[in-house]
Amino acid sequence: MTRKYKIAFMPGDGIGVDVLAAAKVVLDVSDFNAEIIPLDIGFTIFEKEGEPLPERTIEGLKECDAAFFGAITSKPRTDPDVQRIERKYGTIYRSPIVRLRQIFDLYSNMRPSKSYEGNPLNFRKIDGSIPMIDIVTFRENTEGLYSGIEFDSLIPELKVLPKFKEFQHRTGAEDSDIRISCRVFTRNGCERIIRKAFEYAEITKRNKVTVVHKANVIRATDGMFLEIAKKVAEEYPEVKWWDENIDATAMWLMKRPEEYSVIVSTNMFGDIITDQAAMLTGGLGFAASASTSNDFGVFEPNHGSAPKYAGQNKVNPIAALKSMGLMWEWLGETELADKLEMAISQNIKEGKIKTYDMGGTSSTTDVAKDIAQKFTTD
Image 1 (cartoon, rainbow, N blue to C red):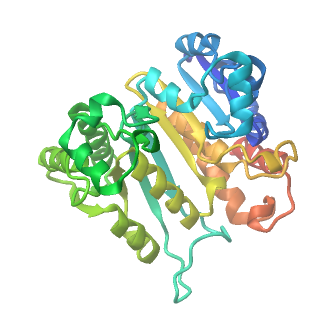
Image 2 (cartoon, rainbow, N blue to C red; image 1 turned 60 degrees about the vertical axis):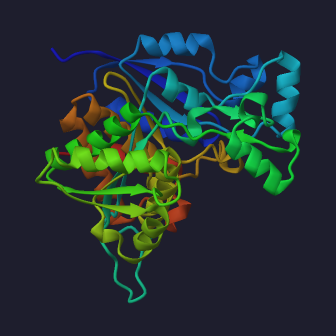
């Protein structure tokens, strides 16, 4: 008898509800043996309770094997709605997905970007050719500029440092006019994401890794990232690797994306280039992701909550479906993952049932039902 999993089901906000409902259509026709556990997260629950990630959700996740997540509405602290809710409940808004990554140490964010035959949104070069792109990016997911260590003014502990004194003298800025976001790296944080990328390249026989950084300018943090990459690479002699500055990668992705296979980068740089890679392969409607630790994972489409489309049943559910496939693969249910990937590929290749972004008129549910039908057909 196959193992029965406990899977947290967290639609979140906006179209997160739509795309997870679509994914449920495929989930229901699969033989995936799981107890589905609904849990609250997002801006909607923040409005109701003053906390976008309730303690009951955190405790519920601890009882699960993995989490399937839709999308959240993300707003800055200066947003009037955020400020109003903070005043009402006496709380401070913090990104619930960033907190999840840190609470559960989901240090590895893997984002595949793949061209599908027949996708009208595939990237075309100037000469009209369509390169077949198949990139898997590993993004460090818990450190860097997303560490959450920030200051709303120049605090006394920093003010006394010579470099801050020099900066303040040069700019003439008052203490209260300075905002600071710390870009914090650790050796362990760098090494484990770099090693994850090299291991993946070796296991999948891709044998090619690009290390993306800005060590020529951000010398302390990215300098350490590159230094560690060089040492880790020595342990994988069969894997060809090279390093690039982030701005160079952004350029070459637009010129010769087919030359990339596995990319590894830091938190913010990885966040940026994976959206760029997604646009080369159809847009965020195709962009899936897996945020994992060594024993837990959260699987989600990369897109946001897109409030203007919420509840209209019109957005592309493929990113959510691909995320479910990543969850199955991570859990070891590779047969299910492979069947789903084949069904998605077939749907795109036929080009009959497709959402508005692909030039079609089909609904979110229509696409899910078509892929479910293909999933169940031998």
